Image (cartoon, rainbow, N blue to C red; front, top):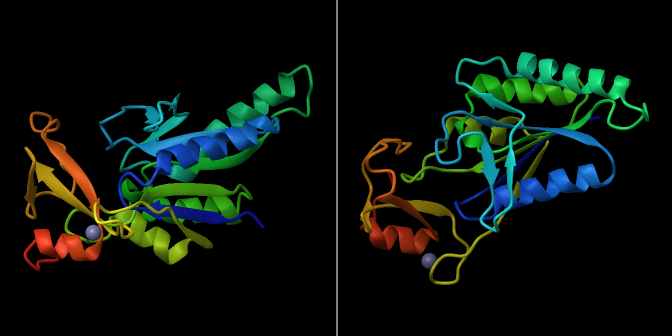
Length: 212
Ligand SMILES: [Zn+2]
């Protein structure tokens, strides 16, 4: 049975790199995949970009009101039709896998759709995302993925102290801030907002004991 996988981690844990590597592994075997991401992420528009410099355009963007299963079916049909016309009919005649980047920004209903795609449509779904926001709260998409995914895999990264990073502290103009919107989408301040992946001990030290 096809499964729903959630690979999660703090920021800078190499999620996009892992996603692009998974895509490459499928394609190396002559299999077709579809790439998607929520539209809310403004930093790369329709690109999935890894810090190692690899970049790819997604097959479709997911807006908050979108029916992900219908969107997927539409793009899957396109792949099937192209496969039927191909010179070698068995090559890439169907989608082998759906890969979703920035899955923390999906709605709970859209994550429900991902489970239906895996179980009812029979296509494995690999979702990659950040577990919690800068105030240590789960993003809506991540919370639902934690509830539904058949398989959870943590992608690890290191805090400044060498421990495993758990949280994402927000800095504005180089100073830690612990108040604000879950997603910093203010275009004017976008270049001033950065994040540091931190272990719980370092986070609590910077926040003076505050968690949310
Ligand atoms: Zn630390």
